[in-house]
Image (tube, rainbow, N blue to C red; front, side, top):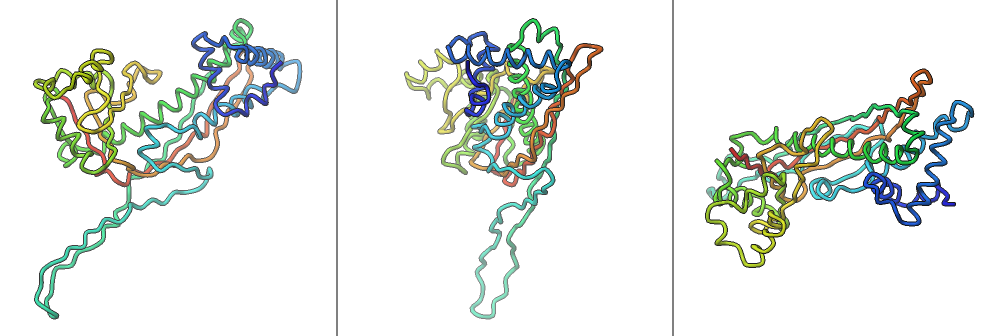
Length: 329
């Protein structure tokens, strides 16, 4: 019999198990052992009215396994964009942009010449503090019917919900910050080579490892740009036949966000008809406090009320000039 507490200490193991349970592919011997241990936990939860031991067993488990996935597990894309750290629940973040050298050297007369003053720019960055919560309920009938699978699905879906909402919030903010007349805002009536070159070239000029981010439904339009096929090698054409989306454009890596991946209300993770360019780090991000899972039984309705709360992050976009946006009309 697998000792559940030991497996829970293995980084990412319970997340992998939950993902496999949701896809009905948890077939390895260890996966089966974890499922048996989780079924034992499920049985304890169902009997919580008979014992005083398991009344917080579910919330304790969820805190233990969900927290690393939403606080400590790195998001590759966001990790490329932000310097990441953690702070206490009641700590404040004072953010100031890295100074920009605006000192201008003027030609002047020797020794007594006077010139216009110039200054170092200490502009403060744009800071956002976001607190997310998920409230749901677990039916005892679902526990009786599906046992460990019900808990695995709850674990997986709560993690996805929090992480997806975080990603959506950040790019929605970036979208709002880059207004139409900004020098890093580009517009194209349909995708054109000129617009893509200007948009991608903006971040390529400011980074050795530029990144282009967009929904798959919009990125597929690159291959259809008039005249673009003449720039493609045979190997790139072969890749397009396989994947329909290029891996790079003008030296910038393309990060594909699936249009099928959405928030629970159907909202896509990125704004539609918009592509974003990223040139290195654009700011800082802090995870604040600790995740809490509140568990309250409702015996009359035979459900367990659950609330995931305390998921709070603070981010500061201090280098907006490191981001470009292309709006496709």
